[in-house]
Image (cartoon, rainbow, N blue to C red):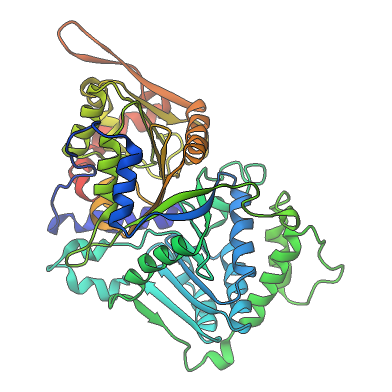
Length: 504
Protein backbone atom coordinates (compact mmCIF):
# COMPACT_ATOMS: atom_id res chain seq x y z
CA UNK A 1 0.00 0.00 0.00
CA UNK A 2 2.84 2.38 0.87
CA UNK A 3 4.36 1.43 -2.48
CA UNK A 4 1.11 2.43 -4.20
CA UNK A 5 1.14 5.88 -2.61
CA UNK A 6 4.84 6.34 -3.33
CA UNK A 7 4.32 5.25 -6.96
CA UNK A 8 1.39 7.61 -7.38
CA UNK A 9 3.32 10.61 -6.05
CA UNK A 10 6.38 9.67 -8.09
CA UNK A 11 4.29 9.76 -11.26
CA UNK A 12 3.08 13.18 -10.16
CA UNK A 13 6.65 14.39 -9.79
CA UNK A 14 7.60 13.27 -13.30
CA UNK A 15 4.95 15.57 -14.74
CA UNK A 16 6.58 18.68 -13.27
CA UNK A 17 8.39 19.52 -16.49
CA UNK A 18 5.09 20.28 -18.19
CA UNK A 19 3.11 21.46 -15.20
CA UNK A 20 2.88 24.58 -13.09
CA UNK A 21 0.20 26.61 -11.43
CA UNK A 22 -1.12 27.80 -8.15
CA UNK A 23 -4.64 27.72 -6.77
CA UNK A 24 -6.46 28.39 -3.59
CA UNK A 25 -7.10 25.57 -1.19
CA UNK A 26 -9.33 28.10 0.52
CA UNK A 27 -10.49 31.29 -1.16
CA UNK A 28 -11.55 34.38 0.70
CA UNK A 29 -15.20 34.70 1.66
CA UNK A 30 -17.12 37.96 1.84
CA UNK A 31 -17.84 39.35 5.26
CA UNK A 32 -15.82 36.87 7.34
CA UNK A 33 -17.54 35.99 10.59
CA UNK A 34 -20.57 38.16 9.79
CA UNK A 35 -23.10 35.31 9.85
CA UNK A 36 -23.17 32.08 11.91
CA UNK A 37 -21.78 28.96 10.28
CA UNK A 38 -25.19 27.25 10.53
CA UNK A 39 -26.65 29.90 8.21
CA UNK A 40 -23.77 29.43 5.76
CA UNK A 41 -24.45 25.67 5.76
CA UNK A 42 -28.11 26.33 5.00
CA UNK A 43 -27.15 28.57 2.07
CA UNK A 44 -24.76 25.96 0.65
CA UNK A 45 -27.40 23.26 1.06
CA UNK A 46 -30.01 25.41 -0.71
CA UNK A 47 -27.66 25.72 -3.69
CA UNK A 48 -27.50 21.92 -3.80
CA UNK A 49 -31.28 21.57 -3.82
CA UNK A 50 -31.72 21.49 -0.06
CA UNK A 51 -30.24 19.67 2.91
CA UNK A 52 -30.80 15.92 3.08
CA UNK A 53 -32.07 14.51 6.39
CA UNK A 54 -30.02 11.44 7.27
CA UNK A 55 -29.12 9.27 10.20
CA UNK A 56 -25.39 9.68 10.62
CA UNK A 57 -22.68 8.08 12.72
CA UNK A 58 -18.93 8.68 12.91
CA UNK A 59 -16.75 5.56 12.71
CA UNK A 60 -13.25 5.84 14.14
CA UNK A 61 -12.56 2.14 14.77
CA UNK A 62 -10.97 0.24 11.88
CA UNK A 63 -12.76 -3.04 12.55
CA UNK A 64 -16.14 -1.34 12.82
CA UNK A 65 -15.43 0.33 9.47
CA UNK A 66 -14.91 -3.13 7.94
CA UNK A 67 -17.99 -4.59 9.62
CA UNK A 68 -20.08 -1.69 8.30
CA UNK A 69 -18.92 -2.26 4.72
CA UNK A 70 -19.63 -5.98 4.97
CA UNK A 71 -23.04 -5.35 6.57
CA UNK A 72 -24.16 -2.92 3.87
CA UNK A 73 -23.05 -5.03 0.93
CA UNK A 74 -24.29 -8.29 2.42
CA UNK A 75 -27.73 -6.74 2.97
CA UNK A 76 -28.04 -5.17 -0.49
CA UNK A 77 -31.18 -6.11 -2.41
CA UNK A 78 -31.15 -3.74 -5.41
CA UNK A 79 -27.92 -1.88 -6.12
CA UNK A 80 -24.33 -1.33 -5.01
CA UNK A 81 -22.17 1.57 -6.23
CA UNK A 82 -18.59 1.44 -5.00
CA UNK A 83 -15.48 3.55 -5.63
CA UNK A 84 -12.06 3.25 -3.96
CA UNK A 85 -8.60 4.72 -4.51
CA UNK A 86 -6.16 2.34 -2.78
CA UNK A 87 -7.13 -1.30 -3.33
CA UNK A 88 -4.78 -4.13 -2.49
CA UNK A 89 -4.70 -7.86 -3.24
CA UNK A 90 -5.02 -8.88 0.41
CA UNK A 91 -7.78 -10.92 2.06
CA UNK A 92 -9.89 -7.83 2.80
CA UNK A 93 -10.05 -6.58 -0.78
CA UNK A 94 -10.41 -9.98 -2.41
CA UNK A 95 -13.06 -11.25 0.01
CA UNK A 96 -14.92 -7.98 -0.64
CA UNK A 97 -14.85 -8.83 -4.36
CA UNK A 98 -16.16 -12.27 -3.44
CA UNK A 99 -19.05 -10.68 -1.54
CA UNK A 100 -19.84 -8.49 -4.55
CA UNK A 101 -19.84 -11.62 -6.70
CA UNK A 102 -22.31 -13.30 -4.35
CA UNK A 103 -24.64 -10.29 -4.53
CA UNK A 104 -24.34 -10.20 -8.32
CA UNK A 105 -25.48 -13.81 -8.49
CA UNK A 106 -28.47 -12.80 -6.36
CA UNK A 107 -29.47 -10.23 -8.99
CA UNK A 108 -28.13 -7.05 -7.37
CA UNK A 109 -26.96 -4.39 -9.84
CA UNK A 110 -23.29 -3.51 -9.16
CA UNK A 111 -21.04 -0.71 -10.38
CA UNK A 112 -17.42 -0.86 -9.17
CA UNK A 113 -14.79 1.78 -9.94
CA UNK A 114 -11.13 1.50 -8.92
CA UNK A 115 -8.36 4.01 -9.52
CA UNK A 116 -5.67 2.83 -11.94
CA UNK A 117 -2.75 3.87 -9.75
CA UNK A 118 -4.29 3.16 -6.39
CA UNK A 119 -5.25 -0.37 -7.46
CA UNK A 120 -1.81 -1.10 -8.90
CA UNK A 121 -1.17 -4.14 -6.68
CA UNK A 122 -4.43 -5.71 -7.81
CA UNK A 123 -4.22 -4.72 -11.48
CA UNK A 124 -0.60 -5.66 -12.10
CA UNK A 125 -1.32 -9.21 -10.93
CA UNK A 126 -2.79 -11.55 -13.57
CA UNK A 127 -4.73 -13.21 -10.76
CA UNK A 128 -6.08 -9.88 -9.54
CA UNK A 129 -7.19 -8.93 -13.05
CA UNK A 130 -8.87 -12.29 -13.38
CA UNK A 131 -10.83 -11.71 -10.18
CA UNK A 132 -12.09 -8.42 -11.58
CA UNK A 133 -12.98 -9.96 -14.95
CA UNK A 134 -14.84 -12.76 -13.19
CA UNK A 135 -16.84 -10.17 -11.31
CA UNK A 136 -17.48 -8.20 -14.50
CA UNK A 137 -18.88 -11.34 -16.13
CA UNK A 138 -21.43 -12.04 -13.38
CA UNK A 139 -24.98 -10.72 -13.56
CA UNK A 140 -25.60 -6.98 -13.80
CA UNK A 141 -22.05 -5.86 -13.02
CA UNK A 142 -19.95 -3.03 -14.47
CA UNK A 143 -16.28 -2.72 -13.51
CA UNK A 144 -14.37 0.38 -14.53
CA UNK A 145 -10.79 1.51 -13.96
CA UNK A 146 -10.32 5.22 -13.54
CA UNK A 147 -7.88 7.19 -15.73
CA UNK A 148 -5.57 4.36 -16.85
CA UNK A 149 -2.18 5.57 -18.02
CA UNK A 150 -2.65 4.27 -21.57
CA UNK A 151 -5.61 6.64 -21.94
CA UNK A 152 -4.44 9.62 -19.90
CA UNK A 153 -0.98 9.84 -21.53
CA UNK A 154 -2.60 11.33 -24.64
CA UNK A 155 -3.45 14.45 -22.61
CA UNK A 156 0.15 15.07 -21.54
CA UNK A 157 0.61 18.19 -23.65
CA UNK A 158 -3.01 19.32 -23.67
CA UNK A 159 -4.00 19.03 -20.01
CA UNK A 160 -1.03 17.56 -18.12
CA UNK A 161 -2.85 17.53 -14.80
CA UNK A 162 -5.34 15.19 -16.38
CA UNK A 163 -2.54 12.63 -16.70
CA UNK A 164 -2.03 12.43 -12.95
CA UNK A 165 -5.67 12.96 -11.95
CA UNK A 166 -6.89 10.19 -9.67
CA UNK A 167 -10.28 9.18 -8.35
CA UNK A 168 -9.59 9.74 -4.67
CA UNK A 169 -13.19 9.02 -3.60
CA UNK A 170 -14.07 6.39 -1.01
CA UNK A 171 -17.74 5.81 -1.71
CA UNK A 172 -20.07 2.91 -0.97
CA UNK A 173 -23.74 3.47 -1.82
CA UNK A 174 -26.21 0.64 -1.23
CA UNK A 175 -29.84 0.43 -2.40
CA UNK A 176 -29.91 4.24 -2.76
CA UNK A 177 -30.48 4.26 1.01
CA UNK A 178 -27.07 3.85 2.64
CA UNK A 179 -23.95 5.96 2.14
CA UNK A 180 -20.54 5.10 3.56
CA UNK A 181 -17.68 7.53 2.98
CA UNK A 182 -14.55 8.99 4.55
CA UNK A 183 -10.81 8.46 4.33
CA UNK A 184 -10.38 4.69 4.49
CA UNK A 185 -9.20 2.68 1.50
CA UNK A 186 -9.83 -0.99 0.78
CA UNK A 187 -6.67 -2.49 2.26
CA UNK A 188 -5.92 -4.37 5.47
CA UNK A 189 -4.05 -1.58 7.27
CA UNK A 190 -7.14 0.66 7.18
CA UNK A 191 -9.46 -2.10 8.39
CA UNK A 192 -7.71 -4.13 11.10
CA UNK A 193 -7.17 -3.30 14.74
CA UNK A 194 -4.01 -1.92 16.29
CA UNK A 195 -3.91 -5.07 18.38
CA UNK A 196 -3.49 -7.16 15.24
CA UNK A 197 -1.23 -4.72 13.39
CA UNK A 198 0.68 -2.14 15.48
CA UNK A 199 1.18 -0.07 12.32
CA UNK A 200 -2.50 0.05 11.33
CA UNK A 201 -3.72 3.41 10.07
CA UNK A 202 -5.84 5.92 12.00
CA UNK A 203 -8.78 7.17 9.93
CA UNK A 204 -12.41 8.29 10.11
CA UNK A 205 -15.53 7.42 8.13
CA UNK A 206 -19.13 8.53 8.15
CA UNK A 207 -22.07 6.14 7.81
CA UNK A 208 -25.35 7.69 6.72
CA UNK A 209 -28.83 6.35 6.07
CA UNK A 210 -31.30 8.33 4.00
CA UNK A 211 -32.62 8.17 0.46
CA UNK A 212 -31.87 11.79 -0.38
CA UNK A 213 -28.25 11.80 0.76
CA UNK A 214 -27.61 8.45 -0.97
CA UNK A 215 -29.12 9.79 -4.20
CA UNK A 216 -26.95 12.91 -3.99
CA UNK A 217 -23.83 10.76 -3.54
CA UNK A 218 -24.92 8.62 -6.50
CA UNK A 219 -24.86 11.68 -8.73
CA UNK A 220 -21.29 12.39 -7.61
CA UNK A 221 -20.35 8.77 -8.31
CA UNK A 222 -21.93 8.78 -11.77
CA UNK A 223 -20.16 12.00 -12.78
CA UNK A 224 -16.85 10.09 -12.70
CA UNK A 225 -18.13 6.61 -13.57
CA UNK A 226 -19.48 7.89 -16.90
CA UNK A 227 -16.28 9.61 -18.06
CA UNK A 228 -14.85 8.55 -21.38
CA UNK A 229 -11.42 8.30 -19.78
CA UNK A 230 -12.37 5.23 -17.70
CA UNK A 231 -11.40 1.73 -18.82
CA UNK A 232 -14.36 -0.61 -19.03
CA UNK A 233 -13.09 -3.96 -17.80
CA UNK A 234 -14.85 -6.87 -19.51
CA UNK A 235 -14.56 -10.67 -19.36
CA UNK A 236 -11.87 -12.10 -21.65
CA UNK A 237 -12.05 -14.87 -24.23
CA UNK A 238 -9.95 -17.23 -22.09
CA UNK A 239 -11.86 -16.67 -18.87
CA UNK A 240 -13.74 -19.93 -19.36
CA UNK A 241 -10.51 -21.78 -18.63
CA UNK A 242 -8.94 -19.38 -16.16
CA UNK A 243 -11.91 -18.09 -14.13
CA UNK A 244 -11.40 -18.06 -10.37
CA UNK A 245 -14.91 -17.56 -9.06
CA UNK A 246 -14.45 -20.52 -6.69
CA UNK A 247 -11.48 -18.73 -5.15
CA UNK A 248 -13.54 -15.58 -4.62
CA UNK A 249 -16.33 -17.58 -3.01
CA UNK A 250 -13.86 -19.43 -0.79
CA UNK A 251 -12.34 -16.19 0.48
CA UNK A 252 -15.76 -14.63 1.04
CA UNK A 253 -16.90 -17.59 3.15
CA UNK A 254 -13.62 -17.72 5.03
CA UNK A 255 -13.82 -14.03 5.89
CA UNK A 256 -17.48 -14.25 6.89
CA UNK A 257 -16.86 -17.26 9.16
CA UNK A 258 -13.81 -15.67 10.73
CA UNK A 259 -15.65 -12.43 11.54
CA UNK A 260 -18.43 -14.43 13.21
CA UNK A 261 -15.96 -16.36 15.34
CA UNK A 262 -16.62 -19.65 13.53
CA UNK A 263 -13.46 -21.77 13.64
CA UNK A 264 -12.14 -23.18 10.35
CA UNK A 265 -12.97 -26.75 9.43
CA UNK A 266 -10.74 -29.43 10.88
CA UNK A 267 -10.04 -30.63 7.36
CA UNK A 268 -9.83 -27.56 5.18
CA UNK A 269 -10.50 -27.82 1.49
CA UNK A 270 -7.53 -29.19 -0.45
CA UNK A 271 -5.20 -26.81 -2.21
CA UNK A 272 -2.67 -24.21 -1.21
CA UNK A 273 -5.21 -21.38 -1.54
CA UNK A 274 -7.29 -22.61 1.39
CA UNK A 275 -4.28 -22.90 3.63
CA UNK A 276 -2.99 -19.49 2.55
CA UNK A 277 -6.35 -17.85 3.22
CA UNK A 278 -6.63 -19.35 6.69
CA UNK A 279 -3.05 -18.41 7.45
CA UNK A 280 -3.67 -14.77 6.46
CA UNK A 281 -6.90 -14.57 8.44
CA UNK A 282 -5.21 -16.01 11.52
CA UNK A 283 -3.26 -12.74 11.81
CA UNK A 284 -6.48 -10.87 12.61
CA UNK A 285 -7.34 -12.51 15.90
CA UNK A 286 -9.56 -9.66 17.08
CA UNK A 287 -11.65 -9.49 13.91
CA UNK A 288 -14.38 -11.73 15.31
CA UNK A 289 -17.15 -9.40 16.48
CA UNK A 290 -19.22 -9.04 13.33
CA UNK A 291 -22.03 -11.26 14.56
CA UNK A 292 -23.03 -8.64 17.13
CA UNK A 293 -22.65 -5.64 14.82
CA UNK A 294 -25.61 -3.33 14.29
CA UNK A 295 -25.13 0.03 12.55
CA UNK A 296 -26.32 3.46 13.69
CA UNK A 297 -27.71 2.36 17.04
CA UNK A 298 -28.97 5.49 18.73
CA UNK A 299 -27.78 7.72 15.86
CA UNK A 300 -29.76 10.90 15.35
CA UNK A 301 -31.04 12.41 12.11
CA UNK A 302 -29.12 15.45 10.88
CA UNK A 303 -29.18 17.80 7.85
CA UNK A 304 -26.41 16.78 5.46
CA UNK A 305 -25.15 17.66 2.00
CA UNK A 306 -22.65 16.06 -0.41
CA UNK A 307 -20.08 18.34 -2.01
CA UNK A 308 -17.91 17.05 -4.82
CA UNK A 309 -14.94 18.01 -6.90
CA UNK A 310 -14.37 16.51 -10.31
CA UNK A 311 -10.92 15.44 -11.41
CA UNK A 312 -9.01 17.80 -13.65
CA UNK A 313 -10.35 17.04 -17.11
CA UNK A 314 -11.16 20.12 -19.19
CA UNK A 315 -13.38 22.28 -16.91
CA UNK A 316 -13.95 20.40 -13.66
CA UNK A 317 -16.50 21.52 -11.12
CA UNK A 318 -15.37 22.14 -7.55
CA UNK A 319 -18.00 22.55 -4.86
CA UNK A 320 -15.69 21.58 -2.00
CA UNK A 321 -13.10 24.36 -2.05
CA UNK A 322 -15.61 27.20 -2.15
CA UNK A 323 -17.82 25.50 0.41
CA UNK A 324 -14.97 25.08 2.88
CA UNK A 325 -13.91 28.69 2.34
CA UNK A 326 -17.39 29.96 3.16
CA UNK A 327 -17.77 27.72 6.21
CA UNK A 328 -14.39 28.65 7.65
CA UNK A 329 -14.97 32.28 6.80
CA UNK A 330 -18.04 32.16 9.03
CA UNK A 331 -16.13 30.77 12.02
CA UNK A 332 -16.50 32.85 15.17
CA UNK A 333 -14.82 30.70 17.82
CA UNK A 334 -12.93 27.66 16.53
CA UNK A 335 -11.70 25.84 13.45
CA UNK A 336 -10.45 22.26 13.85
CA UNK A 337 -8.51 20.87 10.88
CA UNK A 338 -7.21 17.31 10.49
CA UNK A 339 -5.40 16.31 7.32
CA UNK A 340 -2.40 14.04 6.72
CA UNK A 341 -1.11 16.26 3.91
CA UNK A 342 -0.92 20.04 4.30
CA UNK A 343 0.22 22.23 1.40
CA UNK A 344 -1.44 25.62 1.90
CA UNK A 345 -1.52 28.20 -0.86
CA UNK A 346 -1.28 31.95 -0.27
CA UNK A 347 -5.07 32.23 -0.38
CA UNK A 348 -5.45 29.44 2.14
CA UNK A 349 -2.99 31.09 4.49
CA UNK A 350 -4.83 34.37 4.10
CA UNK A 351 -8.15 32.74 5.02
CA UNK A 352 -6.68 31.25 8.21
CA UNK A 353 -4.90 34.49 9.06
CA UNK A 354 -8.17 36.43 8.77
CA UNK A 355 -9.88 33.89 11.04
CA UNK A 356 -7.04 34.12 13.56
CA UNK A 357 -7.19 37.90 13.52
CA UNK A 358 -10.89 37.66 14.41
CA UNK A 359 -9.88 35.73 17.51
CA UNK A 360 -10.82 32.30 16.14
CA UNK A 361 -8.87 29.40 17.65
CA UNK A 362 -7.30 27.28 14.89
CA UNK A 363 -6.09 23.77 15.63
CA UNK A 364 -4.31 21.84 12.86
CA UNK A 365 -3.58 18.15 13.48
CA UNK A 366 -1.51 16.38 10.85
CA UNK A 367 0.78 13.42 10.46
CA UNK A 368 4.48 13.73 11.15
CA UNK A 369 7.75 12.53 9.65
CA UNK A 370 7.64 9.82 12.32
CA UNK A 371 4.29 8.42 11.14
CA UNK A 372 3.95 9.47 7.51
CA UNK A 373 3.93 7.07 4.57
CA UNK A 374 6.34 9.35 2.69
CA UNK A 375 8.32 12.37 3.84
CA UNK A 376 8.18 14.10 0.45
CA UNK A 377 4.65 15.59 0.68
CA UNK A 378 5.48 16.79 4.21
CA UNK A 379 8.50 18.85 3.19
CA UNK A 380 6.56 22.08 2.45
CA UNK A 381 5.09 22.06 5.98
CA UNK A 382 8.45 21.08 7.50
CA UNK A 383 10.00 24.21 6.04
CA UNK A 384 7.00 26.54 6.43
CA UNK A 385 5.43 25.73 9.81
CA UNK A 386 7.40 28.38 11.70
CA UNK A 387 6.29 31.09 9.31
CA UNK A 388 2.69 29.88 9.53
CA UNK A 389 2.76 30.18 13.31
CA UNK A 390 4.25 33.66 13.02
CA UNK A 391 1.76 35.04 10.53
CA UNK A 392 -1.47 33.29 11.62
CA UNK A 393 -2.67 34.39 15.07
CA UNK A 394 -4.19 31.73 17.32
CA UNK A 395 -2.88 28.86 15.16
CA UNK A 396 -1.54 25.73 16.85
CA UNK A 397 0.00 22.83 14.91
CA UNK A 398 0.16 19.25 16.20
CA UNK A 399 1.91 16.29 14.56
CA UNK A 400 0.94 12.78 15.61
CA UNK A 401 3.47 10.51 17.25
CA UNK A 402 3.90 6.75 17.03
CA UNK A 403 3.96 4.21 14.24
CA UNK A 404 0.46 4.84 12.89
CA UNK A 405 -0.23 7.07 9.91
CA UNK A 406 -2.98 9.63 10.55
CA UNK A 407 -5.04 9.55 7.36
CA UNK A 408 -8.37 11.19 8.24
CA UNK A 409 -9.60 14.32 6.50
CA UNK A 410 -12.12 15.98 8.82
CA UNK A 411 -12.92 19.58 9.74
CA UNK A 412 -15.14 21.13 12.41
CA UNK A 413 -16.29 24.75 12.55
CA UNK A 414 -17.58 26.22 15.82
CA UNK A 415 -18.54 22.70 16.95
CA UNK A 416 -21.68 23.13 14.84
CA UNK A 417 -20.74 21.96 11.34
CA UNK A 418 -18.58 18.92 10.52
CA UNK A 419 -16.96 17.90 7.24
CA UNK A 420 -15.87 14.29 6.59
CA UNK A 421 -14.52 12.95 3.30
CA UNK A 422 -11.51 12.35 1.09
CA UNK A 423 -10.33 15.97 0.71
CA UNK A 424 -6.84 16.83 1.99
CA UNK A 425 -5.61 20.35 2.69
CA UNK A 426 -3.26 20.17 -0.27
CA UNK A 427 -3.13 21.28 -3.87
CA UNK A 428 -3.53 17.77 -5.24
CA UNK A 429 -7.00 17.51 -3.69
CA UNK A 430 -7.93 21.11 -4.49
CA UNK A 431 -6.80 21.17 -8.11
CA UNK A 432 -6.23 17.71 -9.52
CA UNK A 433 -8.04 14.72 -8.02
CA UNK A 434 -11.68 13.73 -7.85
CA UNK A 435 -12.87 14.21 -4.26
CA UNK A 436 -16.06 14.21 -2.19
CA UNK A 437 -17.10 15.24 1.30
CA UNK A 438 -20.24 15.13 3.41
CA UNK A 439 -21.07 18.26 5.39
CA UNK A 440 -23.45 17.96 8.35
CA UNK A 441 -25.09 20.62 10.50
CA UNK A 442 -25.35 18.99 13.89
CA UNK A 443 -23.91 20.03 17.22
CA UNK A 444 -23.94 16.42 18.42
CA UNK A 445 -22.09 15.03 15.41
CA UNK A 446 -19.70 18.00 15.24
CA UNK A 447 -18.77 17.42 18.87
CA UNK A 448 -18.13 13.73 18.13
CA UNK A 449 -15.78 14.63 15.28
CA UNK A 450 -14.13 17.30 17.42
CA UNK A 451 -13.62 14.77 20.22
CA UNK A 452 -11.94 12.36 17.80
CA UNK A 453 -9.60 15.14 16.67
CA UNK A 454 -8.80 15.90 20.30
CA UNK A 455 -7.93 12.22 20.81
CA UNK A 456 -5.43 12.45 17.96
CA UNK A 457 -4.12 15.73 19.31
CA UNK A 458 -3.46 14.05 22.66
CA UNK A 459 -0.96 11.66 21.05
CA UNK A 460 0.76 14.45 19.13
CA UNK A 461 3.73 16.76 19.51
CA UNK A 462 2.90 20.46 19.33
CA UNK A 463 5.15 22.54 17.11
CA UNK A 464 6.25 25.61 19.09
CA UNK A 465 8.30 28.71 18.34
CA UNK A 466 9.73 31.69 20.17
CA UNK A 467 9.88 35.12 18.53
CA UNK A 468 13.00 37.19 19.19
CA UNK A 469 12.89 40.99 19.62
CA UNK A 470 14.07 41.46 16.02
CA UNK A 471 11.15 39.35 14.74
CA UNK A 472 13.18 36.23 14.05
CA UNK A 473 11.26 33.01 14.73
CA UNK A 474 13.21 30.37 16.62
CA UNK A 475 12.10 26.74 16.88
CA UNK A 476 11.38 25.46 20.37
CA UNK A 477 10.16 22.06 19.24
CA UNK A 478 9.07 20.85 15.86
CA UNK A 479 9.65 18.32 13.06
CA UNK A 480 13.31 17.94 14.01
CA UNK A 481 12.16 16.21 17.18
CA UNK A 482 10.29 13.63 15.08
CA UNK A 483 12.94 12.88 12.46
CA UNK A 484 15.96 10.68 12.89
CA UNK A 485 19.28 12.58 12.80
CA UNK A 486 20.29 10.79 9.61
CA UNK A 487 17.13 11.85 7.76
CA UNK A 488 17.35 15.38 9.15
CA UNK A 489 20.85 15.76 7.69
CA UNK A 490 19.57 14.69 4.26
CA UNK A 491 16.53 16.96 4.40
CA UNK A 492 18.21 19.97 2.69
CA UNK A 493 18.87 17.74 -0.31
CA UNK A 494 15.11 17.20 -0.63
CA UNK A 495 14.10 20.84 -0.29
CA UNK A 496 13.70 21.04 -4.07
CA UNK A 497 10.38 19.22 -3.53
CA UNK A 498 8.85 22.55 -2.49
CA UNK A 499 8.89 23.44 -6.19
CA UNK A 500 6.29 20.68 -6.62
CA UNK A 501 3.73 22.51 -4.46
CA UNK A 502 1.13 22.63 -7.26
CA UNK A 503 0.98 18.83 -7.40
CA UNK A 504 1.74 17.76 -3.82
